[in-house]
Image (tube, rainbow, N blue to C red):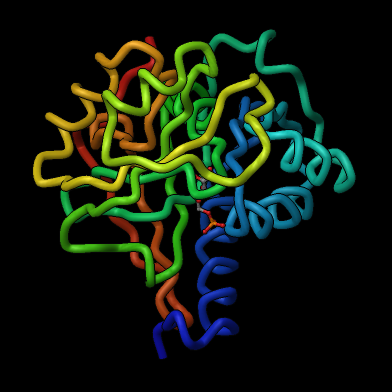
Length: 227
Ligand code: 5RP
């Protein structure tokens, strides 16, 4: 049976099998970007079990700590200019490949590491695919001028969470998401918005969805090139 929000064990199992399928895509010698979240938490042991000769970089202190504990070799993102593969979860996946990310407030770093990858692989359980994206859309905002920025991105609310590791304030946009590209362009063009959680299909190479005991795979042809 596919995982349902009311069936937490099924959902966790789906995260695990999607993460394990993604771990199989990693090969010796690769530089690997590691996302953040509960699905990525299943990826890390699956990757460690493969004992590959790989270099990883993490998108959050939480992922970095967990990966090191498992013996994965972690380097500073600052020393890496491209990744062979980046693997990360998502909060929503639309049929055309648009994503919403940032449920954990790590979307700025996640977008940088996804955008620097030759191949960005998304791992989700079966509650994440949606027919159309909807709010909330996570935001990271500069604290300078925060009230003015909040007015420009209204309707929005501040999230009651610590600042990002880069000092950004985490918020959520609550308005309509009828046209993700137009909204993404509007948010990107708003002074004070460090980054938003809308990820374009061009960035996405593969989506792996855990469904029951199997994994549905979609490959997107319009894959982003990090070169
Ligand atoms: C964190 C993210 C996560 O990838 C997203 O929230 C999905 O998390 P999970 O795997 O726990 O469902 O974008 O900023």
